[in-house]
Image 1 (tube, rainbow, N blue to C red):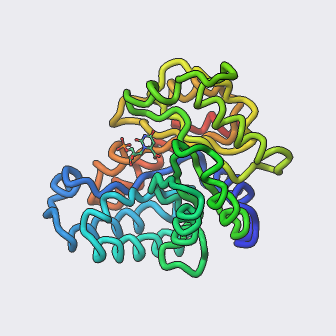
Image 2 (cartoon, protein in one colour; image 1 turned 60 degrees about the horizontal axis):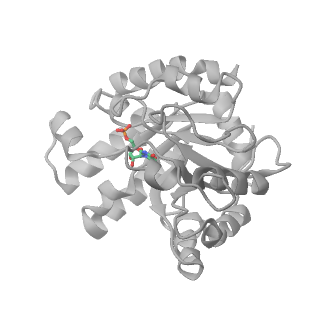
Length: 280
Ligand SMILES: O=C(O)c1cc(=O)[nH]c(=O)n1[C@@H]1O[C@H](COP(=O)(O)O)[C@@H](O)[C@H]1O
């Protein structure tokens, strides 16, 4: 068992061992609200999100609320996000907040405090960040995360078709931008046992990887499963069976089974089974 004082890498490794390799995104999409027979309003946002927390947070290793769908409703939406985070953490899931932040260092410090300092109402276990102001600009997030036993996932090879124009670009030293992100985080994770705190996002839809994924010693978050066309076979092909720190992430593919909590649980359980090969 891990303890709250452990590093994020240690806590994630323990959660993957105990619960299997799956992250479920809580994305209260207008289309999903409609599919659940709900209106596109604040009350429905809360019902949807707390139903997800109730159905999933005591069984899946990681839940990933998508901040944008809460921010859409302003401050009251953020309050729902805070309650959703609390419900998920109380039920034992690690919470990875998908906020994709990235800014100059001094501003990044404030973002890191908002999401990674335990005194914040929005405190979570990890966040997603964007490296396109330069990876070094994210240093405050790495520092605040390490101080509080949290993790940071940096965009590497994203699942959307527009990503390659930036992420495949070659630097003067010949490496792709994505490879330089992976290498910089591998250096920060070096020597960490069982796993470093700093992860990279690699979509299941990228086709052939243009980067060497082997040396990260940290977690890979792999969105794009299901609704965006990625599959367990893609994950196997991109990472090989040996990479134990791969965290497949699925939102609509699981959430479309709601609002029935039993059906949501079953959908998550099927995905966990499908990805069982990752931890063998
Ligand atoms: O960081 C992410 O989670 C992310 C990165 C990426 O490359 N692609 C991607 O789809 N995501 C997020 O993962 C979720 C995917 O949702 P589904 O396509 O419904 O599974 C959304 O919240 C996206 O914002």
